[in-house]
Image (tube, rainbow, N blue to C red; front, side, top):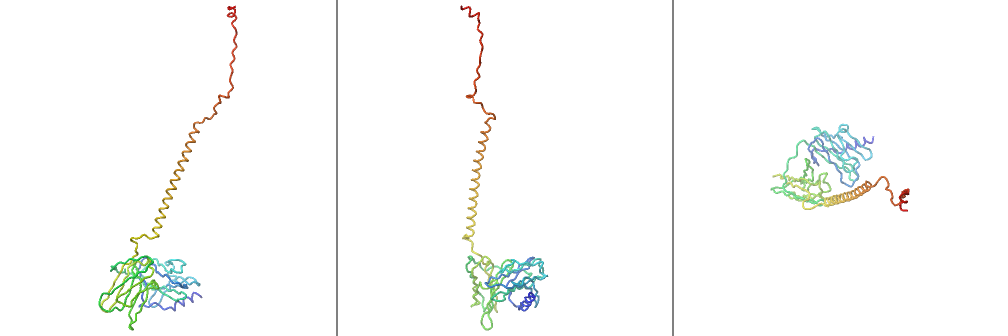
Amino acid sequence: MRMLIVLSFLHMMKSVQPEEIVDTTLILRRTITLDCRYSGSGTVIQIHWAKVNGSAEETICTIHKSYGKYISQKYMSRMSFAVENSSSDLSITLRETSEADIGIYVCYLAQFPAGTMKKVIAVQADNLSHIVPSSHQAFEEHSNITLNFLYTSIGDVNQVTVHKFTNGKMDLVAYCERQMSGRKLLSYGFDFLKRSFLNCADLRNITLTIYQGAITDEGLYQCHFSSEDKNQTTSINVHSKTIGRTPISTFALICGISLLIIVVIFTIAALCIVWRQKNKRIQAKQVDVSFSSTYAEPNIDTMDEDHIYANFVPNLSFSRSWT
């Protein structure tokens, strides 16, 4: 009954409309991972994954903090969670995909106290076009990344869209559009919400700032200017700055390995010395034993002397001659 209440609540959510902006575009592979990570400070109460079929939504899975887990029978044998029992990484992986898996997917997050958030993911069969960067820019980790995109053609710009390209994946960074009233509508992609800022006060001169840059922010950033006269695309290849410096972690690892090698060498040398000394003592003991007799040598000094007695018979004839 509780699960039915949860599903009814999800059914009342506003479905994804065709004109809505897609947060991430993926190329269909044999195995695809639909990313949905929550980086806020609130508490995630419920997550719901669905696939859009026309004006309806097909449930893939639902997880509620109190009511438990529900996985559709259609996806149960080939779906898995990227990280089990994680409150921040709510991504799912689909295996043995086919053309039937092409389409729009939505990750709904019900979290307290902000409410419901959603991430829209499109899976397509066509590869993303190859983009040649207009320039390159390096950044240091944990420092802000600032990118500037300039429109050089003639005419007024009505709309600006910034995307990030990495390994067959396209993420929406930010979107800015001039409305009829003259005001500008600014929105951010799901993965860049609250950690980036797009200055679009002048749509001809755009500045993007990403706070606390990390290795995951490496990629090709493309800014597309839409104008009534002429569209223009500018791209910047962004990578972390590692040349010319040794990271502390790498230096510590090198020192640790060097110290370990020294300790091992000294230990082996000490063992060799001990073994050689022990071997010499064993050999010396064997030599002493080989020269010792089984029987004790007699003590000449303490032997009893054998006395020889001789009985002489006097020659009487000889003695008479002298008389």
